[in-house]
Length: 163
Image (tube, rainbow, N blue to C red; front, top):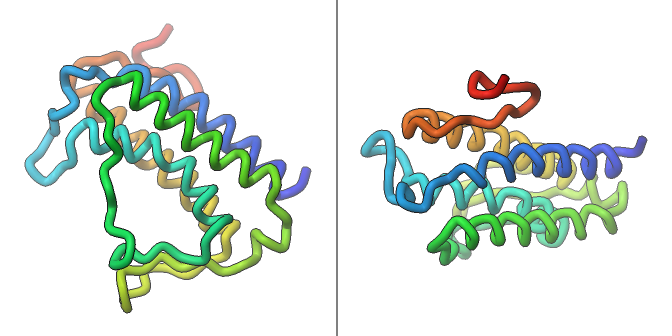
């Protein structure tokens, strides 16, 4: 199996788990957050939903400069819009990965804020980082849902809420 095939397989596997988690996000708790320093449930859910789109961004650009591209919150007002956003992000990432080349995965990509460089890695490494970010933030989302007493779906096996 090639690196691209493995990345596609992992993208699909993580998407299945992410979709189950996003389906549990309650609209009436969008503004809830567990701590004053935490983001809202909507912010975190939207970030989880957008992360598959980082595959598209990594393959079609050479960098993300926050100074030139400040984060713009997606206009999400319902769970349906959240899930649609996730599906669009996933489709964009998958489409770019399906036509990617091994050479493209070796090209360099930079994450920066103006002159401050956070990271420079290969595009393949950036894609893997986006998958790690998905798992990381999805786990945070699981904590948010647990604190709201919403049953958590299993990720790599059953959760405590499943038989």
